[in-house]
Structures are given as structure tokens and as C-alpha cells.
Length: 220
Image (cartoon, rainbow, N blue to C red; front, side, top):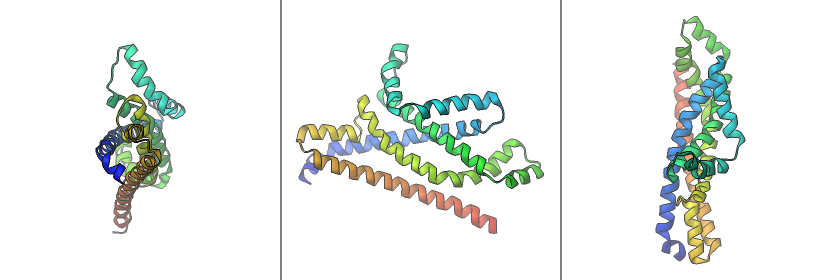
């Protein structure tokens, strides 16, 4: 514990960076997930095909390679992004692709009877999507989005390789100064566990609130 207290500011800096990147990347991934997932579900080829290309490319390639490409290759093409922008963009694009498939699958799982009822009420396609399909699909998305959020938090450890002082970066720095890898890594694992459990608990509360509204709303 004395070692941890001695390097507490190093760990605190890493935690703050990890939380910052997780929040920003998750926000970007959520926007991309919904947009690309809806586009992937479209019957219009001009909308569906670009979304499919984006999803398959970022799902099928390494997240680390994507980060390296953004950080090391883009400057040669005249696009010089900060390490933070590279991290947020790389993680957001990668997990947005996975999230898009979650959105597409949950939209497809909405019972056809709900859609038929919307058509009987003369809803437009946009009204059907906004009022009927997305609220129903959102409940199904939440457990899957929770898993993706946990994976994203853990994946922030990759950004230590592009000079960002996240938790993993700071843990390596502390190890190099203290020569006590066991204790430092144990504390690092515990911190990641606390962060992922906290995220999971928060997402579970959101899921419960959404489900309660739908269930009791249906009974009223």
C-alpha cells in the first residue's frame, strides 16, 4: 500500500485519462452505432452499402492497427491529429462498427406485428422508426451495449502505445520506477475492474428504467 500511496498521482492521472477517453469514445461510438445500424437496415442500396463497408472494415481489422494508422500514417497524408483525437476517433470508429451490428440485429428483432400496427395507423417510415421500432429495439440493445462499453474501457489500454498517459501507460511508468511489477499490476487490474463494474451497474439501471417504462406503459 505504501507503494501505491507513493505513486498515487500517477495512478490518478491514468484513471482520469482512461475515463476521459472512455466517455468520449463511447459517445462517438453510440452516434456511429445508431446511424450506421439504421443505414445497414435500409432497403436502399445507396444507403446500405456504404454502411456495410464501414462496419465490415472496422470489425475486420485490428483496433491497434487502426490506432497506429491514425497516429503514424495520417500525418504523411497531411492530416495531423493529436494523440487524444486519434484515440477517440480510433476507438469510436472500431466500437461504432460493432455497435452498428447490435442496432441492426435489434431492429430486425422487433416483431413484425408492431410494424404492421404502425402501418395501419398510417405512420410514415420515419414515424415508425422513431415511435415504434427504436424504443422497442433499445431495450434489447442495452445488455449488448453494456458488453461493448466494458470492452471499450478495457481497450483504452491500447492508447498507451500512442503516447497517451492512460492507466496502462502510468502502470508501466510506475513499474519502471519502482521495480515492483506484481503489486502495480494487481492494483491496475483492480482499478479496471472497479471501472467496468461501475459502468455495468449504471447501464443496468438504465436498462431497468427503460424496461419498466415499456412494461408498465403497456399495462396502463
